[in-house]
Image 1 (tube, rainbow, N blue to C red):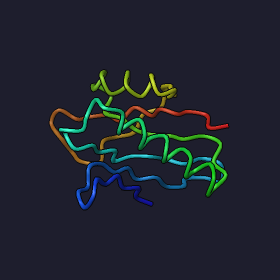
Image 2 (image 1 turned 180 degrees about the vertical axis):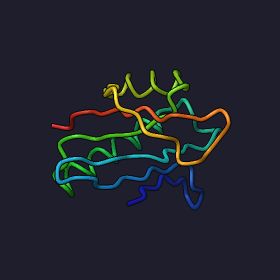
Image 3 (image 1 turned 60 degrees about the horizontal axis):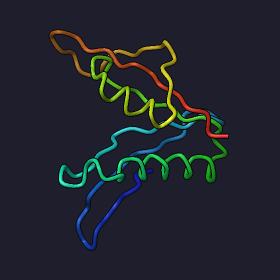
Length: 109
């Protein structure tokens, strides 16, 4: 499911949310138009994804993956209640140097 944030006919943000297990959802591809960043729209989209997963699927936790070297993004998600799990995943593209995705999780209940 992709949740959209629009102002009139203009798309200003979106987030993808999916069910990965009976009680676990995943969000990714959080995007906010640069002119709308730092105004709470990203926070609102995350909250909408969490509410969607909890209400529609009964999810009790939400997971995300973030590039491990993007410490500012990890800090952003930590301020939203997410915690590093200690798990990692390979980046889906082969790059040089290779990137690693850190897994973060937040309880929803």
